[in-house]
Image (cartoon, rainbow, N blue to C red; front, side, top):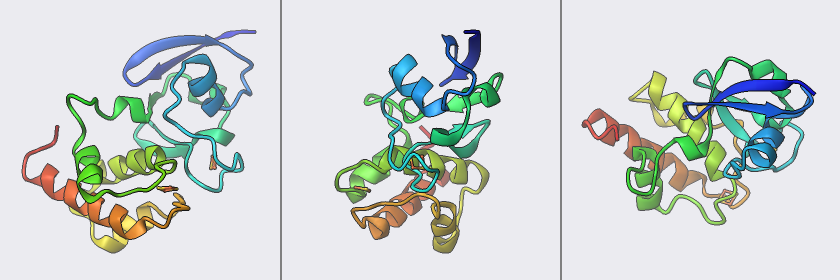
Length: 159
Ligand code: FES
Ligand code: FES
């Protein structure tokens, strides 16, 4: 099998995998980045969302060969316990989640939104998160958390 070169969370990596392997499997099983979750496996729930060149993409149905040379961001690349992203601070503050299974996908999708629109309206946030399902029904707190993070970033607390 050929080696496939990727850039994940700013680091160049090479994996030996069938080119048709879903990106999600490569992230979790080859690279040990288990923050990104498997939900439906059918590109329906959004819990496998990662950023590819800054755009949210469902990694369960995306062949790894289609992202060679592109910058992939997973939840592990968003922040650290010592230096959390404002979205992570805001989600904690709002207690925006119950089981947390949907949150890695929601957080990276929200990051993509705030990177292109630092002052989204509530309906713009809801639209951006339309492909991310939260089975726990935490939507109201998730919307509040994204608004809180946007305000923090605008106030200069980008990291
Ligand atoms: S696991 Fe990919 S969209 Fe559900
Ligand atoms: S917090 Fe449980 S699925 Fe969203």
